[in-house]
View 1: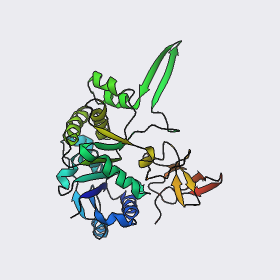
View 2: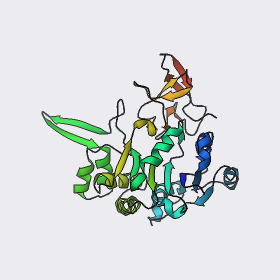
View 3: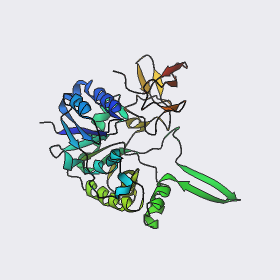
View 4: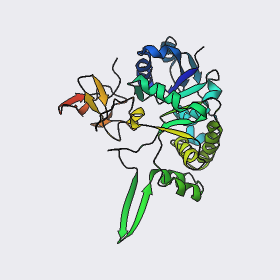
Length: 303
């Protein structure tokens, strides 16, 4: 019996990305001891049949927290904003869960092992979106002299979701946490804390981003025990493009010591000529190499 599982979710539009994520996992020999479980948020029967030989379980995602019908009509994929906080309910037979968004793929198996180790002793394994070269998620508008208006992603989302102002202020300057990749043990108390915060964020705000805000509240306000992992464990390409190591045929961080990217995450998309690389694999962009050359490459997984 496999003790640990990697979980993801997709609808029919994102199926090609999900399929690539699965292939990126299964190419590693070590993956044979790790289950792959999929939440279906609108896959076609043909797509599900294709997955049956590749994954261990497929379950239909549900609205685990009731939300307004007007917010969700025709947007089944938004179930990912709720269901990922309830993974042990869907797949109860595992000890550890590693969630990976379907627009991400695995480049180094050591990162998978790191996530499963990070959630030991009921901790949350996750990364912060802060580091050398990363885009800053806070902005300062200078009004007059030393007077300034400071805006942060966490604070903006918290206020929009009508979160208690004291909580919102506590989030204001905390490094933003992206939950596109995270790990938790089955019996961690963090699940319940996250779910309770998610109920609160869903009441007043948009569904999209609600679970991420809820996790930020869980970490920075409720102080759930967290193991913060390096940026290369969830490399968000829209924040900073990687470089390519031609010698080792792999993507690496753009700054010394040029660590190998563990998980490549195309969150928010990579755009060229109004085309999103996530939906069009033919989209290629200029990527610098460690030798100073420029290549025209896709950032999607290539088997």
